[in-house]
Image 1 (tube, rainbow, N blue to C red):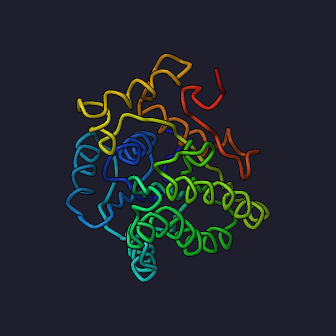
Image 2: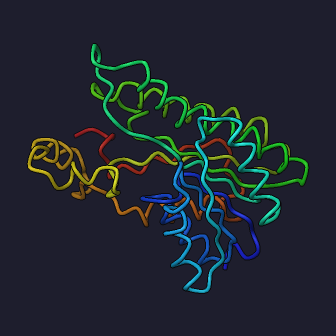
Length: 255
């Protein structure tokens, strides 16, 4: 029960890595605000098994690209659950943005969700944590923000910005007893990439992914990424500030 009586808010909590983080944090004693992007019913689908297992969680919805919705979310979560001790910025969207084929709306959607949303969540929660003298923030970068991806130019740029922003946020918040760190997953088995993992049209892509995974595992288990998030919000990670942990099955090391 490493997180007993802690209040954790997890954006992107309704599926994939975010859902696994919510389940694990609740198992460790946290009261979790599970945040879906638009459909609160998706968040409730994560909450129900947590509560059935004896954990504590409540469902919320917020488009993190909308700063007004962020302010409302933080106010509602705080009034319902209490002051936020842990913030996980897991909300994100992932799709190709190729040169000559990318509309402005797609650019805005990726940057608003992945970068703007993470900043303004920190902007809303960070000062409250500082006033109380402590807290934990985990942002999500990506292996795509470390290496180039010709088909995912905007996504990679936004995630690289999140990783750099994590350093600056740590500079601002470490003096107030707040740890800000980042996880950069590689290919992870989530609903977001189910088509890549299962459809014949992506067979060549799977071969490339498998060839680059030095571990021999093309896709990580989202539970493993959640375990790293738990470490980063635990007291064991107290000395860590502004770091990004890359979890990509060794794909970025070379051959």
